[in-house]
Length: 124
Image (cartoon, rainbow, N blue to C red):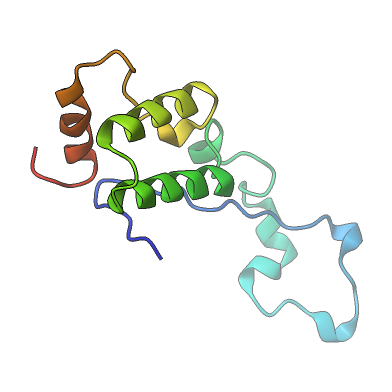
């Protein structure tokens, strides 16, 4: 398992309850937890009113990509330049979490490492 650098924020997974019609109504299936109770559905988050996640939602595939690329960088399979350029194009392709690591391909060679160091928690 990869360790997440200090400055990197992971977005929580957003869960919703299935529609009431798909739930069983047997006596042994009474809600045991708060999130299983029907009154919890009306607290705002299940109907899409959560303002924290309107624009950005957690995407497990994006995070897996970032983790894989960071793993390759940490194992020195990618240079800082290769990593930043790949993240630049990934960000432009829609992988929103990659944009913070990206740097344009025409940047000077020393800028890539200087860009990554503070993001990954190394001395700037």
